[in-house]
Length: 596
Image (tube, rainbow, N blue to C red):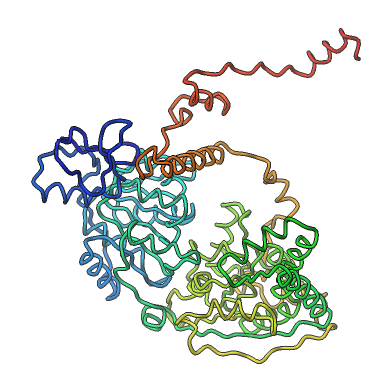
């Protein structure tokens, strides 16, 4: 009997026993037992325990001899987390705040198991940070999978997207898999990266394991249970910077209040007429469905969005932001908003560099490096700086708007908690009084890190004072420019061409471009839906089996998408489309027919 790996699954070939291991199901298509690769460790222990003789050819990972180069002494919470992970069978999730050394825990885990290891990160920036860390820590060759790289080594770093796409082929290549920011893993697609990997040792790292959709319960089966957890309060002061959270409440101007209440009344009237409650599980879905069926519904949805936009972006917050920045003239400040429109407006008003999801990689790196060096004293972003960035010099965070999730709030607080000598971090939360933002703020602050925070009385803003800052540019040059000895002061953004929103839309090409990878993902989704329907009809075993390899992934196949699909469906190559005539031949043919 042989235990093999095939396309993200395990196969028991030539099995003659009465009962197969619990995870295996008979696959009538190939007359063999099949199971998800994630059950490799349990199945191996079962076969050894029952005394069945078999040949194991499934794993292809190696035994290493890793040693840390000049290893620092681990902090007590890092050593405790590794011991707890070992007690859970080298599987589980470690929950530690941002800046407390989760990456060093992963290095200790690699030294402990001494097996080929894969680190999975959510973004390319984090992938590059892990690449640098592994290269410096072990002094060995490190592979990359993602961002245009396809280098497979005993130590490899990949993005979640690339791990999901290639795990059916490479799932037996590593014995240890580390999922950084593991709360991303239970997603509809990313979870297959863990299911198609046979790594017997698994480690998840995160500061906020909970998900709004409740899918974090899947982590127990994908990675393991929570093995160790420490909060911000427990580590602040000694291993994290001392911090405080201050809540600033502002009053909208009279004109904004009128528009806000009119929009709120309009959408609430629609909800009342249709008997919809947004607080229920299906409330928002029903609202979206009904809003598409009538002009009144579309007006209600527009009013809902407008009333949130007014509350989150009231002009009174700009004055409060100016006061906060004046109070911290030499500190490094991060400004967070909920939308890119506010990001660009604040960037132009206060002459600070902006980072959005459209910022180029080189420009983004240049801005972050200048911020850490002190050339820039403030940055404004929406959500892209919530995780995956290393900015240890930041000590002030201003949350002008955001979602109601605890994860986002904790992540933004974590950006300023990396410890350095004499550092005191402060997070300001600016909230519109007597609006929907009160409830949003209350939801995201249901965390032990916000216990005992201070709250200032609401700040009123008259219409005159709420007008745009006319001389803001000159005032910001005096307040927020870099204070570097021996160099002239310069405003934020000098030397950097910040992209305009209209130019970014033209550069991105909108949503009309369909990449080959996006088309492939849609094909995989349709294949899974057909497989699920067949499972419900009882045609195949109730087990997800990955779709067959598409021909275009093979080396040397560079046909068009239509040719590749026709190959998959018929087994034959469709005829190549006729070459498109050039303009000159087209004009000549029209002249012959008398059309020109």
